[in-house]
Length: 604
Image: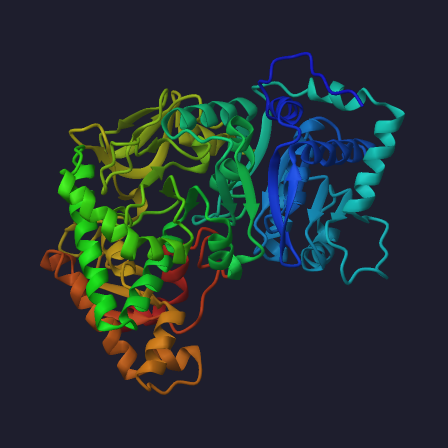
């Protein structure tokens, strides 16, 4: 089997193969099967990718052809992704929660020729719509459970794909290495479909050069190393998780651990104890809620110890955020607080080994970041979007300012337009939108990416995001209000999952609130509040009063014109399967405004 490549590792597949040779015996990936963690070496990762790439070629994949993948995070996702790139193709990730109609849109828009499905559920989606997807040539299924007697000429198993690849490798042992020379740095590598909060999703075109430059820029600021453990759980078709789980390991060699499923994240977190952890604000809010409610159920002594330890942590945090070391007596006190209280709290959420943590993909409350920092967790915020390959600004080590999203990455430029819009420039700015030159021209002007976010730079060169340009509320009285600040404060409550502030063109502000069902149900049970369904829970007088108290607390932090005068609880459970919620667990303002139009009008 030929291993050497004769050109520079300046594309993703060439860099990948260099690492396979260099790190062959080291562990690349871990997955949990039947209760045990199984290790996958770089050598095995390379072999499976090689067979996948050659299997695609045997099926007729041509350079530039698109391959769609719809699956939860697992090693096969990575073999399919890297195999597509090694064969000269372009990977298109599809959110596993997408409906059949959404799958149809992405397949037709991208012109995908192959569809890789995780299991029977994802296969059913494509079978339902394939008559309307004329470009689709082959469907490949990773997990054939329940499909033993299923037969369809267009459908094959992932194992059969690997067999095809192995046979082609035996016939032509030089083909794989030859194919690695094909893609060039400026070529399209991946299509990332944005979640489509305004109109249908757009396919962002990201080149090999975009990805490699972004990895290098990021690693200069927050370096990783081969001993780091990372947990992979956000959808791999999202640019943030793709960067963390697929691309960054090629630069630094850290190990990726796949969660079993979304429900087992807390358990898997504790088992793995990641050293570097990236999560969206919803996860950070969930961990915080759990800790706060645990303390509510603890003994008087435990509550006192918690308050004391947190008080010490806050003082230490203040020194560190101001760029100075705490005095020795305070450091000694912090060590004691950590040993007696904080270590157990961090262990309970699996962050006892974390070197640093990142929050991104949505705004987060500075108070929440301060809470984790006070526990001794080095938490930082990162800002960016799909169109700039993920990150563009980040908190540098020892230069963290909560309420900002840090400084530009090396070689990234940030400019604030006259109307306050944030503009970005750099090697990480994408190639444009697939098959949409008009939208591309609107978004990238003279090399500057127009983000649609509004913000400003502070006196220390840190970027402050005010809000999405289109989300800023102008009340009937002409007052400009940024709803995200108010929403973040509401979400800081352990009983509130998400909130949408309303008030554009109205006399006052109102809010639609989505309760944290787990915590609110526990409150109802503890306080003997009768309920039968989720809807009846949201209508219970005691629950409305509970949320009212939380809203009142938030109102105290804002000027009168920015306070919430009325609110309603959303009486249906929304999940990422619903179009009202993005895959990164944010409520979509536009969809919520439409769906709950009558509820909103009732408040006015």
